[in-house]
Image (cartoon, rainbow, N blue to C red; front, side, top):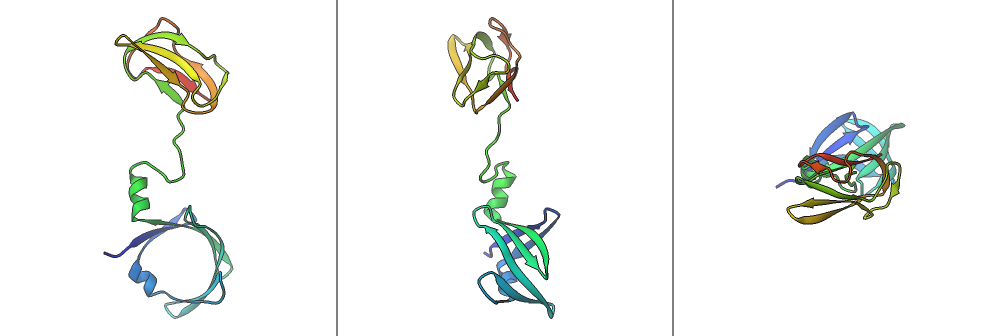
Length: 161
């Protein structure tokens, strides 16, 4: 099975390449970051200006024109299709009730700055008290419930700025 790659250039164009395409590339290294490339009998001067190997992002100069190139392999494409991106975390902007219950306590106020794992509120559901902790550092934008309110599953409880 041949390894395939997807190249995104300047976030506007994309190209699919496989191992045989790369093996057939007529490129000669002039020094560590500069190359002489022939494509369809036409010469090109290529230079790697910068490289972020972990993010697979490169700034390439070809005949004095600069391009940003992002390289993805099959695993990167699969991970992205699952809604996950390497090196990124999902920012949670709202806390919603995971089940119906009763608000017993609210530990924060609108405008308050909270740190990750600070206590936000306590929801009683099925005779159990469930403490909600802040999933991230942030500022409380709104509190949509009050102590004593009955809430439904999926109801907005607290929103972050």
